[in-house]
Length: 58
Image 1 (tube, rainbow, N blue to C red):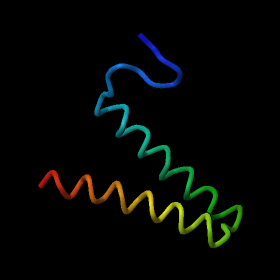
Image 2: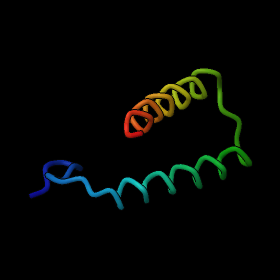
Image 3: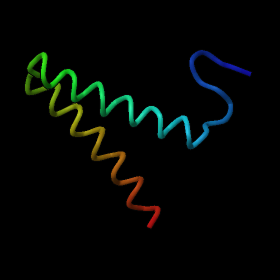
């Protein structure tokens, strides 16, 4: 069952693929445009939250 954009289950491979897409998109945008301070801070905040979750898995 699909509700909106979210499925009932999240598969680790889907998360891994999203992370790869984000990395490639960020690299592309870094070459083609500059980010303002608020955008960089928002990206940094979200990456910090992801790292907190990943660090709990150790």
